[in-house]
Length: 280
Image (cartoon, rainbow, N blue to C red; front, side, top):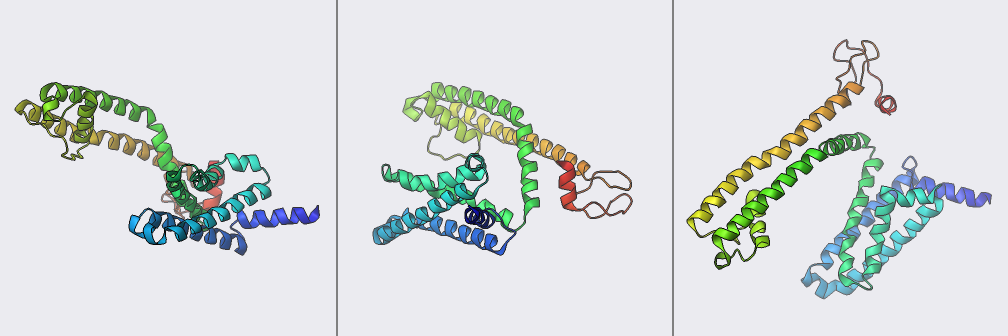
């Protein structure tokens, strides 16, 4: 029983932890394996390379999948709460990283979904102690969540506009000029209003060109809307985050997350780890 507990503790410290040399080496080796497996997958998608080295690349893919499967099983084995790990973000990603190769036995094209393994490289933030970068990404994520209703309204408005302009171009141009259906015309409106302009479908009549010009000008105006929404929410979230870093002497906020001294009185600010504790 004791040996089992020691084994689980050792595996947990190595696989989940980064505070030990073994844990750091394990995570770095894991990231190297992930990147190598992705390089193998990318090379396999090139027909000229696949024709020569396809068999070897598939053998490597099966080896990588076997290693990742063993790693996933070990994570479940040594985790104090296996179900919590399996339901967590990394747990789901770890499972999805090994499923495509097994699915490829029945659906060959499914193997390329294994590119999702790249998400596992996000562990490098934890390995290199780049937690503050994750905090910055959380600020951006919260800003997007705060703006979700405004963004939804914006996209709903755009959807209505492209439907109207697409239908209008279908009536004006018609099938003889390439606008064979309303969905095809809506595709043209989306490409035009987003200023992409593939050029595979263009109006030929004078009235159609006039509508296309209006759609292009409208597209430039529309592009500024989501940028303004997200920028406003991001600015508000950053200001709120700065207010959480308060000086213990003058009790004034507005400091950056990496500030060491108060910009008002010059007193030393709490250490970053203390600030995270106070925020929570």
